[in-house]
Image (cartoon, rainbow, N blue to C red; front, side, top):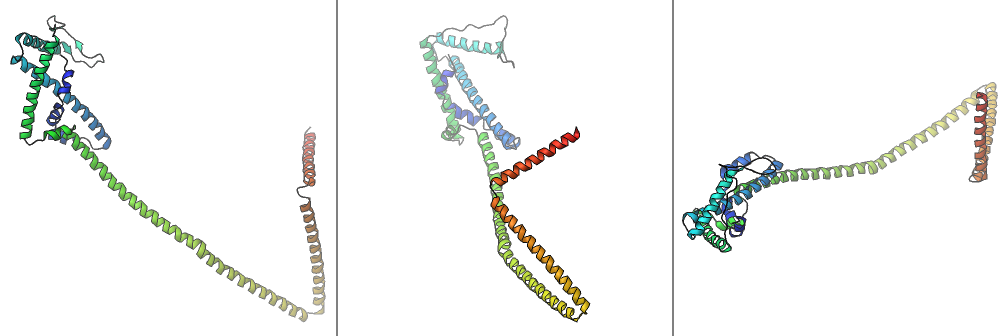
Amino acid sequence: MSIKSESSQLSGISGISTISCSSPKLNTTIINNNNNNKSLEKTLQKLSKCEKSIVELAKVKLIFECLENITSTNQLPSDLNNKLEQILLSHNVDKYLSLPTDTKHGNIKSSLLGIINVQRPDLTVDDKKLIRKTLENNINIRTNKFIKKFEEAGGNYREALDNDKSSVHNNLSIVNDNVISHWRDKLEDVCNEYQRDILKCDELLNEWQKYKFNDMEELNLKKADEKYLQAQIAEAQAKITKITCSIKMFKETPMTIDAFKKLSNDLDDKINTIETEIKKKKELKKQYEELQNTEYDDVLKRYLDLCSTIKKEERLLEML
């Protein structure tokens, strides 16, 4: 008879097995050995796999013990009881014939006193139905006894069924939540401090902008007024110097006066020459501006290109 076919009848065994694996000592050991979040997640995953395997093992053991109880108490007809007893014995023999190994091919079959395969009696459909019915009755009796003892001890069977995780798993999850809450508080403190710094920085930038533009305008106006006053003072000093020179000039000798006149004439000539030169430059500039963006630019460019080409050829001829 297949053991997996009984799993639908054993919905309560998962809760019972979960209760049985909730050891405080195991809880303390696992918490002490997992200090960081990554190792805690790995431990929770491994613990979930371990819980599932414990539940499956509990189901198999319960079914096997109930079958042994059926055969020992002769709850079936004698012929069928003998067949079932022989099947259980062959199952026990198979356990000793299969040697556990680490290979990928699974367990290695061995022989015991020349026995390799143990023959099992065949069961009819009616035999299987009778065995199944008797097995379900025995399982119900045992589970009801366990539930009664569990509730007498102060446990709540319904809550145990609703929770598919052991107390170890739940406590570890609480530890994980505590770590997350701890770091969330720390991050919130850092974010609040960062926000305060940003607001302070914004306030300082606004003040800096005010000093840079508003106050600098006032400072520049003060400096401009100062420079304007200095220019007025310099202009007044120049006028004073000119008047002083004129007064001194009329106090000098006739030779000095002649020299001054000659110097003045030379300066006038020089000034006239410079003014004439400036006028010519302005006229040339005006003419050039009028010729801009015309054919003159193209002609000038070609001329300059030809000059550079001729110079290059002259250099080449000199080198030859």
